Length: 191
Image (cartoon, rainbow, N blue to C red; front, side, top):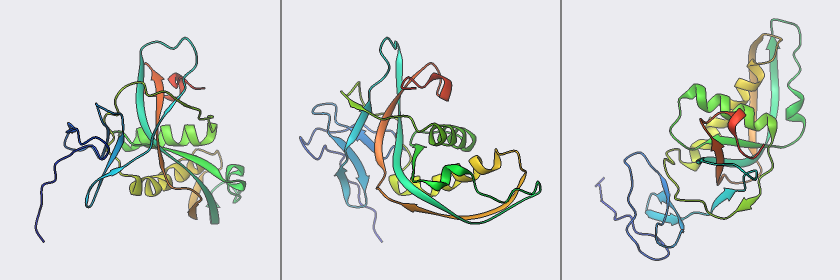
């Protein structure tokens, strides 16, 4: 197998894209086109900027992979006697998986909080450049497993073991969500 260097040129206007080492997606500084690193080079990527609440100042835009999935819990055992899965899983859920560089704990917390809250997403105008998108979309589905476990483990019934499957109903879409201050649910500027 040979390693080939590929120039990162926008798929729409061929402008060179400046990239940090770990990043996997960018918006073109010239035309705004989303670009995703694929095995054969860059591929077009729709990037959506979520509208923030009015009056929000000094926003930081963080990338999230968002997709809809059904969680089928086949087995759940607890130390507290409640072996029923969370009622969240009765309906399809939209998952929000941080696509930026985050610790596992931060990814689990943000992903679980947003997946429980189900904030509405309304696309607005681009508010800058996409930066720090380091999680590929194919890894978002795997990361959703941590979110399910986090939600189930946070319940008061002392989870002992759980087996489940995540069946996606849509492909991950890249959304930039507005935050004021640090990236925590309390500062998400769309809630």
